[in-house]
Amino acid sequence: MNYIKHLTGFFEKVSADYDLNPTHISLYMAIFQLWNQNRFQNPISISRDELMRISKIASTATYHKCMKDLTEREYVIYKPSFNPFKGSILEVCNLDFYTKPVPKKELKKRATKSKNDQVIEQVNEQVTKQALNKHQTSSKHVPYINNINNTNIINIAKQENLKNEKKLIFTNSIFDEVQESDLKIEKEKEKKLREKKKKIEEAPLSSRAKSRPPKPTLEETQIYFLEKKFPEVEAQRFFNYFESNGWLVGGRTKMKDWKAAARNWMLNTKKFGNKPNNSVRTETKTINLNPNHLHVTNQKNYGEAL
Image (cartoon, rainbow, N blue to C red):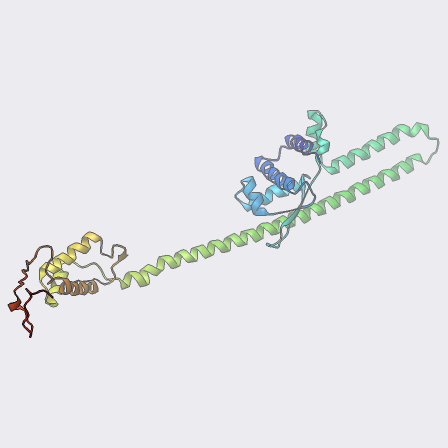
């Protein structure tokens, strides 16, 4: 498969198709990239998320609309899979025959004409040819035979039209089902997110905010320290320390009970408050080497050698 001819044919066909927009082209180029990775084999297994990521399409509705338009215009043949664990199957149509130089008038006609119009034109051409060849036949039953042939051709054209309409109805129903399933999934996700937000908003108001006591004032701390028979100076130290700290325990967690913290403060003052400071108070000790001052039972002369 010559991918250069295929791409030139694609752009020749797109230039004549005025109903397509840049999103269709980006989706087709993403499909072409996956087709290239699979070494141009038909059909290939595709993933919707991967195609949307490559083509920069954010909405699933636009993705399915573009895929539907590409299948209707015979760029691809799409067979969706409703199983989320299996990828959909896609077949890329051959577009090499669009590489031939074609005038602009014919390109516009190709874009506007459908299969039904082409069949009707073929019928009209055959009717005109048969009308021109009437003088060459000598039989009287020729017009009757021509009428029968014309009716047969018209019936064939009608059958083809019905087949095409059935195919379109089938593809439309498939795309509608896929869109409905995607919309249901999105709605369920939105409901779950709303429920989580409500729970998060209601939880602090109900349990946490009510259980936490308010921050104390300086007067309350002084009254509490006096009840525990501690001076007001310690109450002021306690209040100033935690007020500057934002009422955090250890500098990280918020204080849940200031009275419990005050009791710990009181215990620490009892432990460490009465100890002397070694750096300030230093006592000089003199060592007396007189043997008479030693507390021993045997008197020894320490001046003699051992």
